[in-house]
Image (tube, rainbow, N blue to C red; front, side):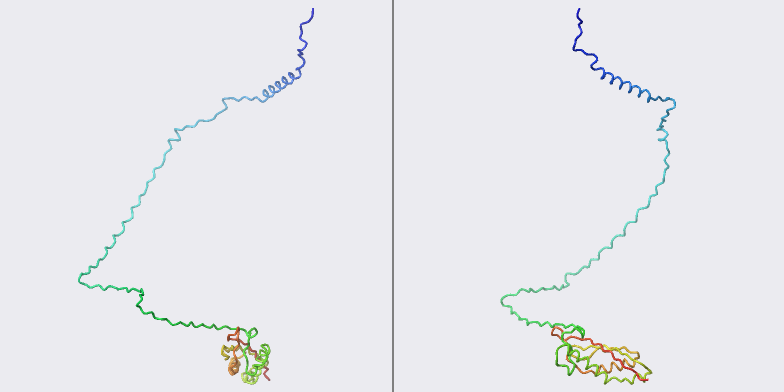
Length: 239
């Protein structure tokens, strides 16, 4: 008698798969059983909220102070209306027309000359284009005229200055006087200032500078200008 077993059916073919599934299921159940916890219901108190007690809270009554309304503004003063009688004559201002017709004579207006206001400009002696010319220094270029003027002024002051005045004032030793003045646009000496150890020397220095002759004024860009000039006066008082 032949067995009726199907040759294609092999029970042991998926045994490893079934074993793995069973093992994973057993591990899950074991882990769940170990971590499972129970709590006693009597120990749990979540508390109760009594809403009636919260609603019964007493709210203090505050008294509201009402401020009196501000007083009404005073009534405006009535306007004073001046009544003018009909018989009073009112002068009317007549505005004449400025339109010109063909019969109107046209007056010719002469040309108005605008005078230019010249500003007083001070140009230093060392940088001026054309230096002032001292009498006797007309020859040579600008540099030679500058040197000639300085030399002539120094010689003039040395001749006119009274050096014996320092001894009369009780001064001794080396004396230094600083003089500053301007040669204006007309060539005259103006604005003389002096600084010295004694007021008497300052007065003498101003006197001597005031005696300088009139010069030809210095020019800058072809126009006469003021030229400041400084001069030191130094001398020794003999004991």
